[in-house]
View 1 (spheres, rainbow, N blue to C red):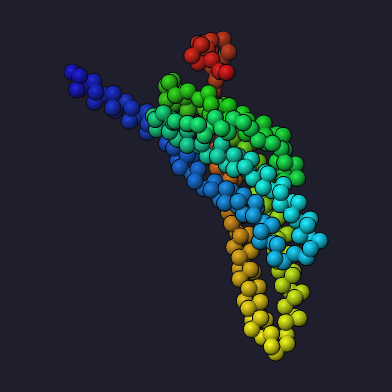
View 2 (view 1 turned 60 degrees about the vertical axis):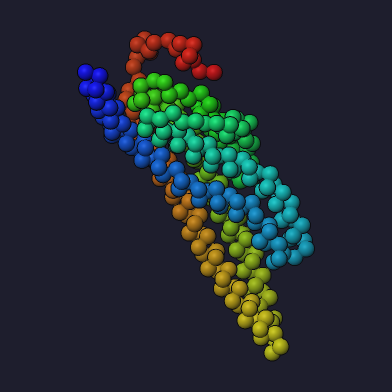
Length: 267
């Protein structure tokens, strides 16, 4: 009898784990690595001045150096947005798979918060969405029925994740503008200087300069595509998450909702 009960329990668990909603949630969570493009482009944005410096005149270098300090100050907040969105998606996937997700110290450190950087488009609205997402991760509980827990996390995390992904999309647009500006500086300098290297004794220098120019053209063309792909990945995750949210079961009437116990109370 115990063996039959064990088999029945396994079958019930398998049926639960194979429900369409839980499958869709796990599928969404598996897409989280696609947000890595945002992280990589954030790092490239941070290092803009290092690449531009050899092509700048002294006055421009002084101006760009001041901007560089702001970029480096803002960079940890950009990384925090990526980490919060990724951890939320991984937590959803673990919950949909019947596992307990161990948040560890990473989320606790993220609770220190981020700041708005208006010049980049990162506003207080995005900061508040990030803070709400981190609060959700800190208080998330997996002790309830699996599908109910997933629905609760989807419902509570909808606006925070949507706002966090919107922040990432907004920043990617700003990164792309910075990339265009860098391209203008670098290629513009080469276009101005190369015609002057036309003396016979400078033929080797001219050949190297033209080769470098072509390499930079290819580099910037590929990076433009990377910015586009990263933004598309963020938008695709945002839409899939919104579709799951729209498919949630209706909430019961307020009178039918039992009061939260001390264990289930939210901080």
